View: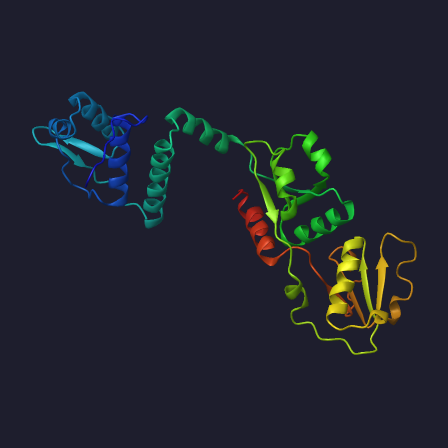
Length: 301
C-alpha cells in the first residue's frame, strides 16, 4: 500500500501514518497477515525519526490492528470476528471522515469535542415551523403533522430570533432562507421547504364542467388569490369561482351548491368524507419525504 506523508502539514506525521494504515486495513488494501515495512525502513524512506514510526506502530498495536512477531516484524492482525460488509464500510467512512477533517486543519481535540457534542445532545423531538404569517404557518404545521411522526409547532420569525430552541429541527419555506440564516446559531441548521408546483397540484384533476360552481376555501388569503388565478388560467370562468375565508363568519354559507371544493390541508378537516374536496398542498412531495425521513431517523441531514 502506498503511503503519502507531508512534513509541512499541521497534522503530525505520526497521525498521518496511523490514519493511512488504519484506512488501509479496514478497506482491505492491507490484508490480514500482510507484513508492514519495518520502522527503520519507513523512517529511512520518508526521512523520519525511527521513534515516530515506532510510536505509530505502537498505537496501531494497542488498537488491535497490527501485532509484532519477535524477530520478524509487524503484521496486520486477523480480527477475532470477521466484520460484516456494513461494518467494514462504516469503518472506512469513519476513517475517511477523520482524514478529511484533519486535512482541512481541524485538530484531533476539535474533532473529538464536536463528536462528543453530537453524541451527548438529545435527538430532535419536534419540528419548529418558522413563519410570521400565522395562517400560512398553521397550514404548514398541518401538512407536516400529517406526514411525519414528530410533534410540530410553530413560531414567528421575530420570536424565533429571540429564543433558544433545543432538541428541535427548524424548518421554513425556502424564500425565508436569507433572513433566517442571518440569525441562525452557528451550530444549528434549518431545513428549507420547497413549495409544490402548480403543475403538481393540477395533476390528475378532471376539468370541471362549464356550469360547475367551484369553491376555494382557506384561512390564508394568498391561497385564495393564487388558486383563483390558477383556475382562471385553466380557462375556468371567473363567475364560476367562489372564495371563502375560514377567518370570516358564516364562511360555509352557500358551499352546498359547489360541485368542487378546493382547499388547503387545514381547511380540509372541516369537510370529513366530502367527496367534493380537492386538497392543494403547499409543500413539495420531495420536501415532505425528507421531513418524514428526519422524523423516522431522529437525525438532521
